[in-house]
Length: 73
Image (cartoon, rainbow, N blue to C red):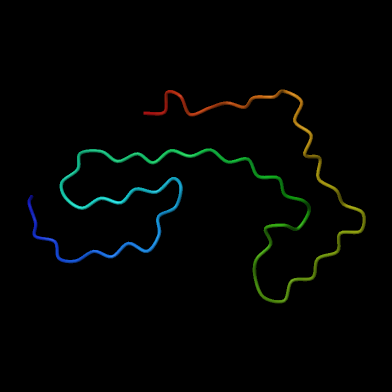
């Protein structure tokens, strides 16, 4: 359905984002990311008590290539 859109101010758009004004059939942002996290990295909440004595994260990736987003339509 057509619409009249006034002023749109875009400050910033992320690397895998989509900005659209108007009619659209399908929008599919695609991105890849590899995240390494150690013990207790993604803890959230109030009053956390985390004890990580000798913790390390292995970031060695010997295969050289990871699975891609080739046919994710």
